[in-house]
Length: 119
Image (cartoon, rainbow, N blue to C red):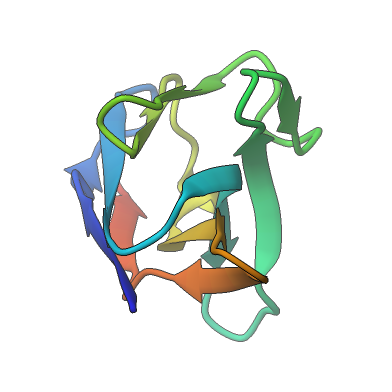
């Protein structure tokens, strides 16, 4: 079993910043892709950003230039620095990872952390 613990959400003003963290723990060989997804009220969950084990990143167009995803493989931890926050960034942000085990790979999700951008 793998656990993902998210932290860093909260309230920010438009133009402000927040930093999310996601720490993976449990039994696994390694972690493939990690990523952040978000779900706003009344909307479907959408991809925000992903990072491969080699550090290759991918961003949704809506956050390019404002959000930066990174990971520390030694700590099994992923981060996302969110700058220039907008009202439309308000959502529950979910951490996702794909862990490698002896004979299979498995997807896991965190419990979600609320990000609210409001003046």
